[in-house]
Image (tube, rainbow, N blue to C red):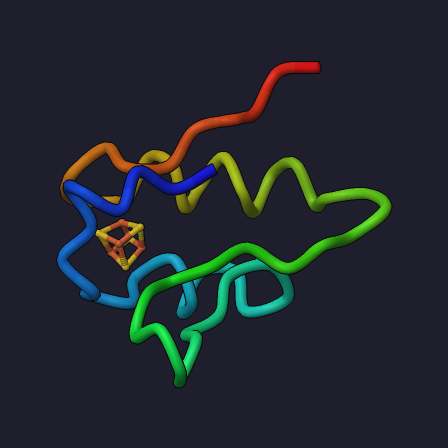
Length: 60
Ligand code: SF4
């Protein structure tokens, strides 16, 4: 999940993990691709590099 309230569109997450994060041209927000499985290491790296701590795992 991305907390849109603190996302500043820096696109660091897209640079780190373009398979998962993308820029939605219609809503102009960063979104997460709907995948069956996620590359945990890359997502963790994006989480660590996000300047606003906006990215987190969705439980369940
Ligand atoms: S790294 Fe964080 S602040 Fe930057 S675009 Fe991604 S979610 Fe938004």
